Amino acid sequence: MSLSAMPPNTPMPANASTPLEDPSVYLDDPNRKLLEIDTDTRQGPVVFRWLTLGMEYLIGAILVALIVSVSCNVVGRSLFNYSLPWADELARMLFIWLVFIGAAAAFSRYEHIAVDALVRRLPLRVAHMLYLLQHLIITILMSVMIWGGYQVLTRSSGRSAIMGIPLSVLSLSLVLCVTFIAAVSLWRMWVSLNVIRQPEQER
Image (cartoon, rainbow, N blue to C red; front, side):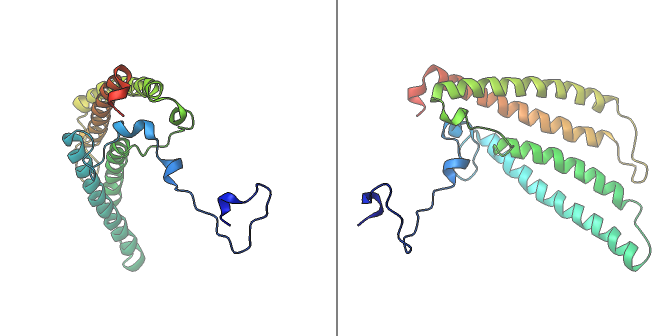
Protein backbone atom coordinates (compact mmCIF):
# COMPACT_ATOMS: atom_id res chain seq x y z
CA MET A 1 0.00 0.00 0.00
CA SER A 2 1.39 3.40 -0.91
CA LEU A 3 1.90 6.15 1.67
CA SER A 4 -0.69 8.37 0.00
CA ALA A 5 -3.35 5.63 0.29
CA MET A 6 -2.86 5.08 4.05
CA PRO A 7 -5.54 6.34 6.49
CA PRO A 8 -4.69 9.67 8.17
CA ASN A 9 -4.00 8.30 11.69
CA THR A 10 -2.10 5.19 10.64
CA PRO A 11 1.43 5.08 12.16
CA MET A 12 4.24 5.23 9.65
CA PRO A 13 6.11 1.95 9.06
CA ALA A 14 9.61 1.84 10.52
CA ASN A 15 11.24 1.27 7.15
CA ALA A 16 9.25 3.98 5.31
CA SER A 17 11.29 6.92 4.11
CA THR A 18 9.67 10.36 4.26
CA PRO A 19 10.00 12.36 1.03
CA LEU A 20 12.32 15.35 1.28
CA GLU A 21 10.94 18.71 0.28
CA ASP A 22 12.72 20.83 -2.27
CA PRO A 23 14.47 23.67 -0.33
CA SER A 24 13.91 26.03 -3.25
CA VAL A 25 10.27 26.16 -2.18
CA TYR A 26 11.38 28.21 0.82
CA LEU A 27 14.33 30.04 -0.76
CA ASP A 28 12.97 31.13 -4.14
CA ASP A 29 10.24 33.70 -4.59
CA PRO A 30 8.38 32.94 -7.83
CA ASN A 31 6.97 36.49 -7.95
CA ARG A 32 10.42 38.08 -8.26
CA LYS A 33 11.82 35.82 -10.98
CA LEU A 34 11.41 38.59 -13.54
CA LEU A 35 13.54 40.93 -11.42
CA GLU A 36 16.50 38.62 -10.97
CA ILE A 37 19.81 38.96 -12.79
CA ASP A 38 21.30 35.57 -13.64
CA THR A 39 24.47 35.19 -15.67
CA ASP A 40 23.91 31.46 -16.19
CA THR A 41 20.43 31.71 -17.72
CA ARG A 42 21.19 35.12 -19.32
CA GLN A 43 18.33 36.78 -17.51
CA GLY A 44 18.41 40.54 -17.11
CA PRO A 45 20.13 43.27 -19.14
CA VAL A 46 23.46 42.16 -20.58
CA VAL A 47 25.24 45.19 -19.09
CA PHE A 48 24.15 44.27 -15.58
CA ARG A 49 25.08 40.63 -16.13
CA TRP A 50 28.60 41.48 -17.24
CA LEU A 51 29.08 44.04 -14.47
CA THR A 52 27.90 41.54 -11.88
CA LEU A 53 30.29 38.90 -13.21
CA GLY A 54 33.13 41.42 -13.25
CA MET A 55 32.41 42.49 -9.69
CA GLU A 56 32.47 38.87 -8.52
CA TYR A 57 35.90 38.34 -10.09
CA LEU A 58 37.06 41.61 -8.54
CA ILE A 59 35.77 40.48 -5.14
CA GLY A 60 37.83 37.30 -5.47
CA ALA A 61 40.97 39.26 -6.38
CA ILE A 62 40.48 41.72 -3.50
CA LEU A 63 39.91 38.86 -1.07
CA VAL A 64 43.15 37.15 -2.16
CA ALA A 65 45.08 40.44 -1.84
CA LEU A 66 43.54 41.04 1.59
CA ILE A 67 44.55 37.58 2.82
CA VAL A 68 48.09 37.98 1.47
CA SER A 69 48.46 41.42 3.04
CA VAL A 70 47.30 40.33 6.48
CA SER A 71 49.24 37.04 6.33
CA CYS A 72 52.50 38.81 5.46
CA ASN A 73 52.16 40.97 8.54
CA VAL A 74 51.31 38.01 10.78
CA VAL A 75 54.27 35.98 9.50
CA GLY A 76 56.59 38.98 9.76
CA ARG A 77 55.64 39.66 13.37
CA SER A 78 55.77 36.01 14.42
CA LEU A 79 58.98 34.89 12.71
CA PHE A 80 61.05 38.02 12.17
CA ASN A 81 59.69 40.37 14.84
CA TYR A 82 59.06 42.89 12.08
CA SER A 83 55.79 44.19 10.66
CA LEU A 84 55.23 45.81 7.30
CA PRO A 85 54.05 49.36 8.00
CA TRP A 86 51.86 49.52 4.87
CA ALA A 87 50.14 46.15 5.27
CA ASP A 88 47.50 47.26 7.80
CA GLU A 89 46.68 50.37 5.79
CA LEU A 90 46.34 48.38 2.58
CA ALA A 91 44.15 45.81 4.33
CA ARG A 92 41.77 48.52 5.57
CA MET A 93 41.43 49.99 2.08
CA LEU A 94 40.89 46.60 0.49
CA PHE A 95 38.26 45.74 3.08
CA ILE A 96 36.33 48.94 2.35
CA TRP A 97 36.32 48.14 -1.37
CA LEU A 98 35.34 44.54 -0.62
CA VAL A 99 32.33 45.64 1.41
CA PHE A 100 30.94 48.06 -1.17
CA ILE A 101 31.60 45.94 -4.26
CA GLY A 102 30.19 42.92 -2.42
CA ALA A 103 27.06 44.87 -1.48
CA ALA A 104 26.48 45.83 -5.12
CA ALA A 105 27.01 42.28 -6.38
CA ALA A 106 24.73 40.84 -3.69
CA PHE A 107 22.01 43.34 -4.60
CA SER A 108 22.27 42.31 -8.24
CA ARG A 109 21.93 38.63 -7.28
CA TYR A 110 19.05 39.35 -4.86
CA GLU A 111 21.14 37.91 -2.01
CA HIS A 112 20.55 40.55 0.66
CA ILE A 113 18.55 39.37 3.65
CA ALA A 114 14.83 39.95 3.19
CA VAL A 115 11.59 38.77 4.79
CA ASP A 116 9.41 37.67 1.88
CA ALA A 117 6.88 35.51 3.72
CA LEU A 118 4.07 37.89 2.72
CA VAL A 119 5.03 39.04 -0.76
CA ARG A 120 5.59 35.52 -2.10
CA ARG A 121 2.00 34.60 -1.23
CA LEU A 122 0.47 37.61 -2.97
CA PRO A 123 -0.87 37.67 -6.53
CA LEU A 124 1.71 38.62 -9.14
CA ARG A 125 0.38 42.14 -9.72
CA VAL A 126 0.09 42.99 -6.00
CA ALA A 127 3.55 41.58 -5.32
CA HIS A 128 5.06 43.79 -8.00
CA MET A 129 3.29 46.81 -6.55
CA LEU A 130 5.28 46.17 -3.38
CA TYR A 131 8.45 45.55 -5.41
CA LEU A 132 7.88 48.86 -7.18
CA LEU A 133 7.55 50.67 -3.84
CA GLN A 134 10.59 48.88 -2.46
CA HIS A 135 12.84 49.83 -5.36
CA LEU A 136 11.49 53.36 -5.45
CA ILE A 137 12.62 53.80 -1.84
CA ILE A 138 15.98 52.20 -2.65
CA THR A 139 16.46 54.51 -5.65
CA ILE A 140 15.73 57.60 -3.55
CA LEU A 141 18.16 56.51 -0.84
CA MET A 142 20.85 55.67 -3.39
CA SER A 143 20.38 59.06 -5.07
CA VAL A 144 21.00 60.79 -1.75
CA MET A 145 24.11 58.66 -1.21
CA ILE A 146 25.36 59.37 -4.74
CA TRP A 147 25.09 63.10 -4.09
CA GLY A 148 26.77 62.86 -0.69
CA GLY A 149 29.48 60.52 -1.99
CA TYR A 150 30.17 62.83 -4.92
CA GLN A 151 30.56 65.79 -2.56
CA VAL A 152 33.05 63.85 -0.43
CA LEU A 153 34.84 62.59 -3.55
CA THR A 154 35.35 66.05 -5.05
CA ARG A 155 36.36 67.70 -1.78
CA SER A 156 38.71 64.98 -0.56
CA SER A 157 42.29 66.09 -1.03
CA GLY A 158 44.11 64.10 1.66
CA ARG A 159 46.30 61.05 1.29
CA SER A 160 46.83 57.99 3.42
CA ALA A 161 49.56 58.32 6.03
CA ILE A 162 51.90 55.55 4.88
CA MET A 163 51.18 54.60 1.26
CA GLY A 164 50.19 58.09 0.12
CA ILE A 165 47.09 56.84 -1.70
CA PRO A 166 44.43 59.55 -2.26
CA LEU A 167 41.58 59.15 0.20
CA SER A 168 39.15 59.86 -2.64
CA VAL A 169 39.80 56.26 -3.77
CA LEU A 170 37.82 55.09 -0.74
CA SER A 171 34.91 57.42 -1.55
CA LEU A 172 34.96 56.15 -5.14
CA SER A 173 34.00 52.65 -3.96
CA LEU A 174 30.87 54.07 -2.30
CA VAL A 175 29.87 56.11 -5.37
CA LEU A 176 30.33 53.16 -7.74
CA CYS A 177 28.38 50.84 -5.45
CA VAL A 178 25.33 53.07 -4.96
CA THR A 179 25.29 54.10 -8.64
CA PHE A 180 25.07 50.46 -9.71
CA ILE A 181 22.38 49.71 -7.13
CA ALA A 182 20.35 52.73 -8.27
CA ALA A 183 20.61 51.63 -11.92
CA VAL A 184 19.46 48.10 -11.11
CA SER A 185 16.61 49.49 -9.00
CA LEU A 186 15.42 51.66 -11.89
CA TRP A 187 15.41 48.64 -14.21
CA ARG A 188 13.45 46.59 -11.68
CA MET A 189 10.95 49.40 -11.29
CA TRP A 190 10.41 49.38 -15.06
CA VAL A 191 9.87 45.61 -15.05
CA SER A 192 7.42 45.86 -12.14
CA LEU A 193 5.50 48.61 -13.91
CA ASN A 194 5.11 46.39 -16.98
CA VAL A 195 3.90 43.51 -14.81
CA ILE A 196 1.37 45.76 -13.05
CA ARG A 197 0.03 46.98 -16.40
CA GLN A 198 -0.13 43.62 -18.14
CA PRO A 199 0.46 40.76 -15.66
CA GLU A 200 -0.87 38.07 -18.01
CA GLN A 201 1.90 38.75 -20.57
CA GLU A 202 4.69 38.38 -18.02
CA ARG A 203 3.79 34.93 -16.74
